[in-house]
Length: 432
Image (cartoon, rainbow, N blue to C red; front, side, top):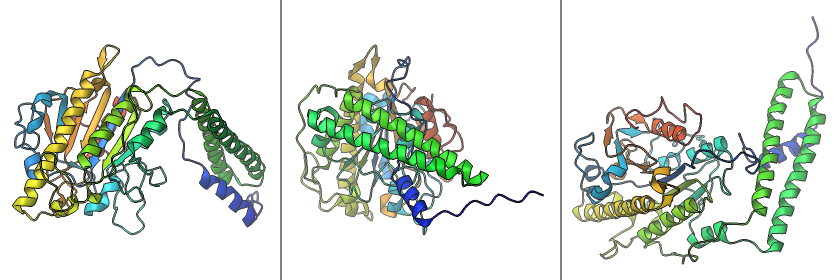
């Protein structure tokens, strides 16, 4: 019998140096340089995902009947003019994603057990799409927020379960999309990219020498790691190419910032406009937007005075008539903004198609009923994307369908070859 291969011992310093570089690398998959690709044949498909982390009052939100002849509920009544542009879902949630507010960071990840000790989030839907489709635009995704606690809440999470902070400043986002840096700034950015490339070159040399001292199992793991390094190199090359490419010309002036948290709906409206501008300029094709109601103090209701207390306090209404009334107004205002977004996207043309038909808009929440911290029967609306809308698709309220089934349908509609995501058990039936 041949003696087993025994790898040579490695110094602690050598391992730590390798680990340090590894930790500095972003997670990548299926990334290719954008400028080396053949011209696109299919028209671009886009996705905008919106979440209010305190949800809506469930009783006035969900209609009593289902199908295509359902009667709009009190909350949805303002959407009558666009009812054929969206689909309403009920009886959906993420299995084992509960614990009230703890579920807010799992809306796009479906990571189970957010209240359990040692919980670690997983990759969000938007980042998964970016991995699979590669960098087709200057920004693979844009992660936005309204009144968001950037250090603790986000819809976007990396494959390692790391929070990606949301951008909550419309002017900063505008400058990022449209303002070209001066030559010195561009040169500095290119130098930084080149320096990162040189680090990777050094790392590749080190790991190749290291492989000679490893057993077959560790060598296979190292090969996987080297593949990731090559993908990082491609991402850096893509970033360099985008840095040299002029940014698009803005069709409107830089927006004024809204910093007052009381103006939550004005800020929401502005960020929706920014998301639309990002799509029109093809700066990105994937946008997430979290409305952080939890972090919102007493706020202004259009046409009325400020609320009597903060959004979170109102959500725990305990059936108080005044609190419920204010929440109902807030819910209807959100639907008014949703309707405005649908109509604006429908009025924009891209070639011979409406921008709405090439843009899926998912609007929902991690919270089924904030008053009781219920994370089941989530309120979910889907507009656009070229689907045949105008219906209420209802699933079992006592045995919810995984929301990730809808996510898989969205993935496939975007051209991602995937049959599963999160806790999915398949694609969504009834959506055509």
